[in-house]
Length: 156
Image (cartoon, rainbow, N blue to C red; front, side, top):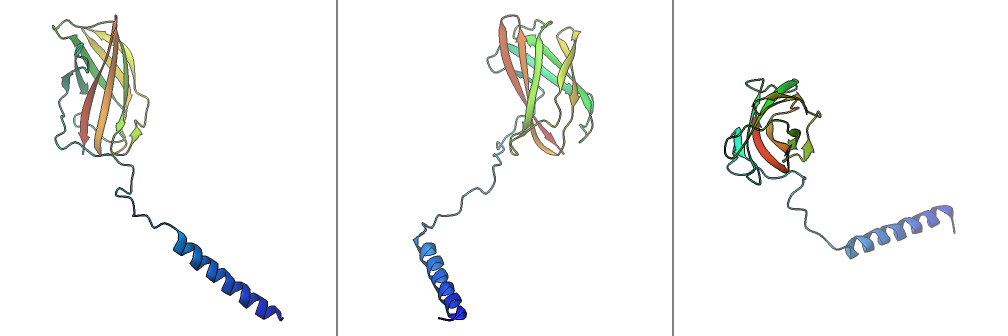
């Protein structure tokens, strides 16, 4: 057999194998959702004061920037009261957050830098990297109570 004939036979066998295995594979429907992005709630609560998850505290947040600028470092102030209105001093405040629809966290690591007294706390190192829906989770650890308040932001 000539070299050309052997190459042609191998090519035909290869095509037959490809065709055979292609027809043997289970055909799956494409995924309904092509990305990992979440879904934004139909009615997003954008209030800046709310009760914590377990109703231990009333928490308010405010930015030093109004409106909040994209890609600009800035500060926030957090006010924490008990549900009866008593100001909470001496708490440990932690912030987490991100963009639920994009499934990523904050581009910086904001942290509480000091208690300002009268239930107020300074958070520094805040920065948002893009427009859209952001969540801020304020974790409060005061005395024997731990609780979290989640705030929604819509940045444009």
